[in-house]
Image 1 (cartoon, rainbow, N blue to C red):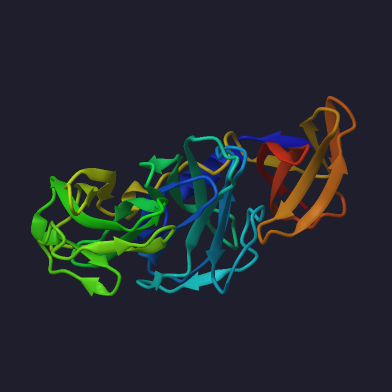
Image 2 (image 1 turned 30 degrees about the vertical axis):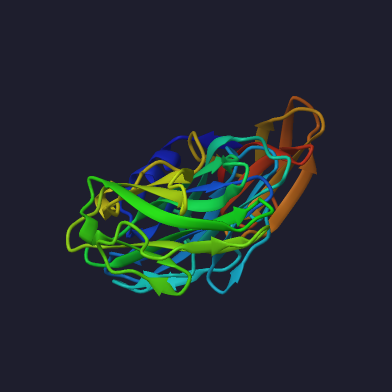
Length: 346
């Protein structure tokens, strides 16, 4: 038997009681096809009790060729792992620094913008604690001679704390490039900004590089970093411009946007999957198409069942499945076409 609605609504309402929220992190990235970019984040338990947390990734909005994956707890997981096998316990008031999202864009990946979503869930109940999204822009940026291979283009920095984001350049020409860096802030005080070239970091408020960055032919340089620190919330943008040191002609530029942390009361209440939670007893019935496989997965990422579709509706026997909360998904030709949450009773 299959039911839905009431428990789904209850799970939605409890999601608003989130204990975990984003403390700081990268919220947007740009990456050139053929390269990879990271997006680390720190979460904090603002509640009064410890919470055991798993992470679920929703990559369904990513284009073909873009392969997101993530780290949580003691290890990083391969692309395609949607639920962290590891559980992390966050004590009250503690910060958790192990999360890091990655996006690898294959050389054939089409340019465009999308979002990869992460849900932090209570490992015991499956309740959604917090939703964290990373905006991803896949595009070729730069001139014929200077490329931006990747950049972290969005960030959240807590008040009174220091944050850092970076970018990687590539000299695609056959001659050395001598570059100067310029920061152009909007709605941000210059005193809150600083930047580093390699091991040299300049004082806050320095908006023009006193030194020249020399990039050798076919040289990869991943050591440009912007730093931010302020006693007040930071919200605004910084336009980063790399110019030719001899002609002062801009060769490459991009924009970095900052936003204050999202408070715990603003944590989204919606579940990762649209619609209500399905409630099943002995049989779960789902609409399917020929060639589709139905998969049932535990909160820890273990696959319990994988059954081929039998027609327009497939009946999945759950008699021997332990009671609890599971994720299901429909897979066709290696792609997820639908997904959701099911609560197995008795």
